[in-house]
Image (cartoon, rainbow, N blue to C red):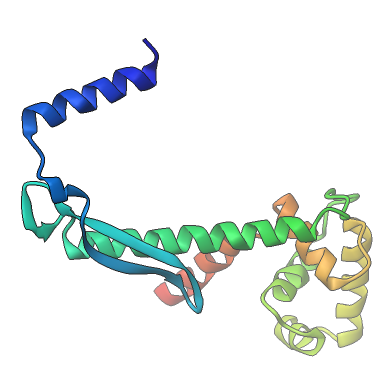
Length: 172
């Protein structure tokens, strides 16, 4: 007997012993599975088979499940998009980045422009431009977009590192 058949017969045995009501598959509530403006569908919560007046899950748990599904689907969508943008990038560091180049790259990742990076690091905009050119060469790319995608893909940059840094600053 295959594993699926064993599970199926176990389920049928349980159903015979428990005597589930006929309306067991009715929906007690539906919650949107949505992240921001992206609507992915609905999460339907069945009625409790033993108390058909109640949903099978408490409202708070159902809401948390819907939010978790939304976040996972959004993350999968973003990851798929990023990977679709990266096939032409070589994905390797030809030379390690210097400490200053890493700082410039992190600020680029946060959306800072050349002037803002210069101000943040107390250096001239021309120096920032030189660092950017070195970053492109070391990553084997030709523009900022590809540099950021390559750095993210090979693990030099991480959204989580950036979030951790922001949390550390809040603690002070």
